[in-house]
Structure formats: C-alpha cells, structure tokens
Length: 542
Image 1: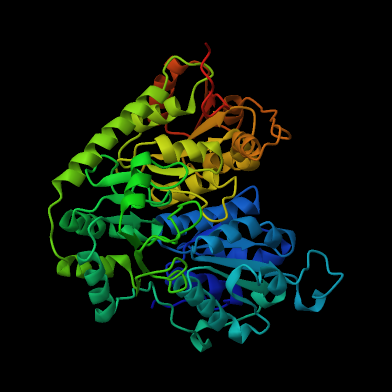
Image 2: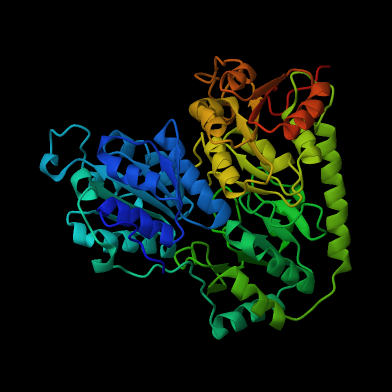
C-alpha cells in the first residue's frame, strides 16, 4: 500500500482521508460544517479524493448507496454531527436494507462538549446502531486508523453501513501514519460452494421436468453463467424487479419480471414449474414465489437461505456456483417450451404496444416507457424512483443492455436523482437517465443544481400527474377514497432552467420523441416534464 502521510504536519484527519484513498475510497458526499472542518480540509488538500457537496444529506447517503449498487465500490458520506448525521438516516437505511456497502464518516463535537446540552451533539453511536454493521467513535488519535480500517472491512464483508464518528479536536490532533495500527481491508469477498452442495443442486435439477430460473439483483454480475445454465437445461429465466435487465428482454430465454408488475407468462411458468432455481434473489413478498414451490437457492448471504423452504440451499457466489452446476447437469432439449415462450412474449409485446397509445392526452405512462425503450442508448445507465414511475418502468420498459438501480427493500421516494448523480460520477462517459414521478423528484429537486455545479449532465424524465398516483392505487385497493395525494407542482422545466440546466415541457404525445432526442444530445442536465395520466388503466369511454 502506498504511503499515507503526505507532509510533516499531518493530522488525524489527513491520515484518515489518505488511508481511505489508499484503499480506493475516493468519493465523498456530504455538507461541511464546524464539527467536520479538519476532515473536509484534509479532503481539499488530498488530490486523490473528491468531495461532492450536496444540498441535503439525504442525497449524500442515497448517492453513496447507489454508487455501490452500480459499481460494487465503496463511497463515503462526510457530514457534521447532529442534524447532518440524522439527515443521512433514510439513505443509509436504503443501503442497509439492500446490502450496499457504505462508509459514513461523521464529525462530532469536541470531546469536552460531549454529552447532553451540547450544540449539535447527539449520541451518534446510539443513533446509528440500528442501521450499521459497524459503529464507533474515535476517542484516542492512536486508534483512529485501526477503527477506520475496521469500519471499511465490515462495510465490505458484511455488505452494509459502517459508521465512524470523529470529534473535531481528535480530527485536528497531530498523527504520524507510520506509527498507526491498522487492519487489512479485503477488496471483495467471493464464496465458492462446496462440492456436496453443487452435487445436490445438480441432482435436483436433473430430477425436474419443468425447471425455471429466477434471477435477482445478486445474479446481475453472473448474467453469462445464468444464460449458460438456462440454455443447457432449456429453462426459462424469470427475474425479480431488481434483476430486470440481467439479460436483454429480447433474449429467447428471458420471460420477464415475476410479481405484481410482471408478465403473465412469467407467472404461469413459475406456477407450472416443478423446481425454481433461485439465483441471488431473496423471496420477497413483492416477487411473490408461491410458498409451497419446490426450490433450490444460491446466495452469497447465508441468512437469506431458507427463508423459503428449500430442497437445496447453496452458500456461494452465483458467478462461482453456476458454472460448476452447469458443467455437471444433464443437457436437455425442449423445443416446445421455447416455442411457447416465444409466442407468449409476442402476445405480451403486442399488448404493451396497444397500451402505449400515441394519441392519448394526458400522455399515458406506457407510451412514455415505449418512447424511452426505443430511444435510450443500449448502454444507458438508469436510476428510477419509487412510485408509479417504478411500476410502469418494471412492467413496460424493454431492457437492452442498460443497467438500472432503485431503492429495493426500503422503497423510499427520492432515490432517483441521487442515484443518477452517483451513476454519472461512476460512468462519466455514459448516458445517465433518471425516471421519476413528481412526488419523488420534488423531495430532492434541490440537488439538481449539484449536477450543474459538478458538470454531471443527466436526463431527468418526470412523470408529472400532480398526485401521488401509487398511493391513489393503494387507497383504491383498500377501499379508501382518494385523500391527501394531490400535488401542487412548479413548472419543472422552468425550474431546471433556473438551476442552469435545460428544461422541456411536454403535454402532447407527438412531441415526446423529439423532446427525448433533443435532451440526449445536450451536454447539460435536462428535465423533461411530461404531463401524464394518473390513472393506471382508465376506463374507455363508451
């Protein structure tokens, strides 16, 4: 590892930031303040790291979570004590629930002011305890590096949030890196399955007549291995919502998403299967695998194994386990399943085309998704928010080679824009698109200026229906009248221009393709404010 001390008068803050840079953590999100000034100044003076100053700490934490979801690398939040720390909670809970590795490095008041009654002082260890896999405060400069490297190690190995609070006076204390005790941070963890587990899975697959593969977010890095297994055993591939895009939707073995917003043939395949091969998915209630369905499961997290009663559970990385399984299973031919799936996919695409009415006003969300499916680059990076925009994306958007991220288990609105910021930082040469509803966007829209400040051009597509449309649907399903869901919106396109970007307002469906093409050509952040229909499936007029 390279030398961490850069100049004779180094402080704890200097050593900590240099240590993180040496371990590859070079991106910090946050807002500076009194209790974190030495850390922030250490970032300023370190040429190997970058500080993205946001307008709300919620954005910082969500962006750090999204950065790990997109890249597998760790980003850090760097904020002040008290309100800066508490504002991180929602984004850090997103990371916790989706097992994203994030480091939260927080300032704390000087040691002499700790305890009740201090300005901006809270018990941060107690506050962060439910969120974190590691959580501590540096009370002695000599322990600072050891605690930092331990925090980073826990974040990576336990796949979660590690929090370290550093009092202001400790940050400014002199420290020489050469005399610091530290721990070793593994860059990643890959678990290989046992031979016994592989043999058990092979036996279960060979004994099945109608196997179906269900791939989740945990199998995205093993797409080729999933396809190899599917091809050899002639098994359709169904995905979770977070697993959408593991392979292009037009691949002959991809049946689509399973669950509420999935395809009818994906549901039918799972119901009729005699074995579900679960790869990197966790049997959430939204995925909706029938409780009694016979299944084998491959997962990197042993605690996920067995949530659904299993025929076989395999503790291991899908990228390591699946090639070994595919190499031992019996090859088979099933032209009837392939033909059936092709026919059902054609029927489904015809249905989506019929839903995408190019004449309807207000503009129908299925039409928005069809236009985006047709026009977005095949390698675009997409960040989506939570709400009806997410529902339509999961159901109607046709993935090619794009990648996307979302707030999974926490399901928090406001993720879309921070996710897009993280995506553009991770992939500066890629087209980055954010698909949001007006409710989710308005929660974090202040950080559109962050994309302008740091020259991070993104395209934000706002489905603007002036209400919380998903809540309306939930109220309808539970037999409640619509209430509390109406929104008073600004002109989002004009707002984008006021921020220094570009804005395009679209009210007619025939104008949408041109607006998307124009936005994709611009070298600035663009908000396409699309006036959309809040009704999912409006009744046709007689």
